[in-house]
Length: 317
Length: 246
Ligand SMILES: Cc1cc2nc3c(=O)[nH]c(=O)nc-3n(C[C@H](O)[C@H](O)[C@H](O)COP(=O)(O)OP(=O)(O)OC[C@H]3O[C@@H](n4cnc5c(N)ncnc54)[C@H](O)[C@@H]3O)c2cc1C
Image 1 (cartoon, rainbow over the protein chains, first blue to last red):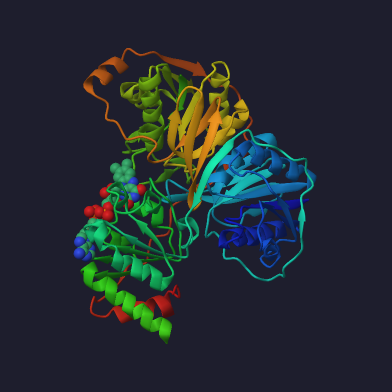
Image 2 (cartoon, rainbow over the protein chains, first blue to last red; image 1 turned 90 degrees about the vertical axis):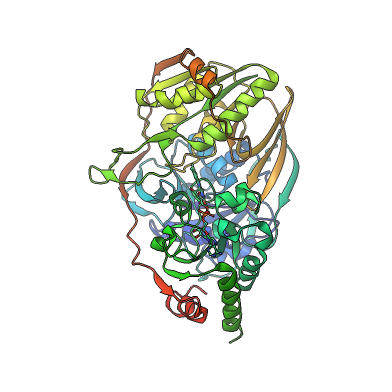
């Protein structure tokens, strides 16, 4: 028996999200005293480091991850070959596109967007996930012999308790895709929103896209990823992928700084699982203060540069 | 072009969520329901646009009880030609995928659309399961789709980027923001929707592998600590020493 975690490198490198899954897999495997096998889809120069974060074995399979049919067949075959009883994928575009297919192929129960290490109750796996866009959570029991789950970013802190291990190629017949990938654009630089530890987010209070420099400087100083409210993305002040909330990306960083955002229920839905929330708003009645841990009532154009300066000072101490 | 659009009903985004029966069931008292925004704004509208451009039909399908007819009529008002409702309260995404697959495998749809996720369960689970049951390619989070009758070009959001993929033949597409622009049904659409066919069929039996144990609401926040705008250093100190996040 084993637990199989599926890791997708990004541009040849496994990032924090991948190491999170290794630790998640390790802790899940510990529930039944089995081992955690990491399967890396594609080449990653640092694949062996998955051993540091919990993988007992690291395998690779170079497949076109955009083809959910090839993806799912590969994982289903690997699951049988490695005698895995729990398959863990990341709750991202490719993981979500494959998880349902894998579950059907293996006659497995599927729960997606899991946010904590499961509990094993006899042969039944209990998993927890957010529902109603973060307004509530739900616990499910998966009773099938094989279980498939997708795990959201920042569900666990990667634990560096092991050491790097050698990597071998998964021995499976080669599959080909009938799809043609025309282009792939990746944004470099900041951590992707779902797995960012620190997020700085701006709303309509900024008045226009020309005023974003002070937010970007704060984000750079913190090493944070940037986000925005929906009307800001709708007005093209910021790119759409920055839109957080009920109809945007749902996030749960350690720190969420909301600047010039009123805190509408649809916005809160996507961010209220953040560990610490800081709100900067000139209106003391802004609903966001009710959901905040720390707040400053004031004009963002004055407060934000001061905050950046204060953080720079802290970093220099 | 013959398309199928899967739609679901969700609580309005402003809903305050609570549960009854010891956390087992959603409390729908005082809740107003809407068509899931991703299904309505992007999946349905793109399907209707393609029909307007290339001819063909748009069928919407929903798994749910008769209280869902309201959102089905809205989809017909926006431009779908006919509708199928599978008469059952779905206990899981697997159940929904199975029911839709039963219907879809009898008709040869060129494209099957659904929203990228529902805003109540946020599972994004139905599309992949449906595609697998039908043995069709599946593309998640599609924000751009061009169809010329032969080749389809689509763009999909991936983690930290975007992919452009060329495909031919039928497939299942989950719709993300920007695939289309929200449409408000007009008076004529609303009038016509009343005469469009809505077929109700019974569900097929499904063996459930996942069951709900309970729902919980988050613990209330302990309250905000306000810091003066003239004392930003204090906020930084709190974040560093108390919250330990920077
Ligand atoms: C179906 C549906 C889905 C939605 N989904 C989302 C979603 O996913 N995400 C989302 O964000 N929204 C969503 N919304 C929109 C949501 O209801 C709010 O309209 C939106 O979040 C408001 O954005 P905002 O806070 O940036 O703007 P506003 O509500 O206009 O707030 C601006 C805030 O800035 C403050 N401000 C102004 N000037 C300054 C200054 N100089 N200094 C400091 N503060 C200042 C104001 O006091 C105010 O609180 C959705 C709405 C609907 C109907």
